[in-house]
Image (cartoon, rainbow, N blue to C red; front, side, top):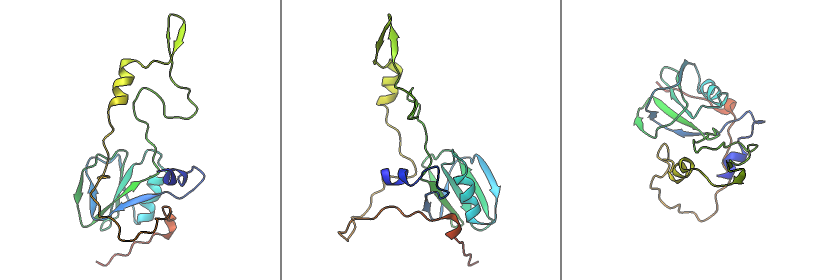
Length: 164
């Protein structure tokens, strides 16, 4: 997914979110806010480097911020879930995901080796579980033309209209 990562630079004020209509993320939110608009809720998430997504309740204007997504969700007609596509999570594999950290080496008897210890090998062999139903069965598109890049929508361009 290089297109999404390149659109999520630190210099941009926009953030990319994937919207799941009528879906409420399960679990305990790291923070809850009473906000008026969806824009405010998405701005809170975009300003938090650990925000993985938000539940936004359109009826009462509540914004629940999640630092982790467990993949389980409930149907709720008043709540939409917005997954932050720009969040970068480090996984615990014994090494840093930062670009400026050199690869881990172990010293044995004064010599440098690139062998991984048993813990690193075990963690590297484990598969990371996908979150929020990323591998759903989808129909093949009827059109044969290639898809364009993802669209970045600035927060001020999103307006919520309530028909209650």
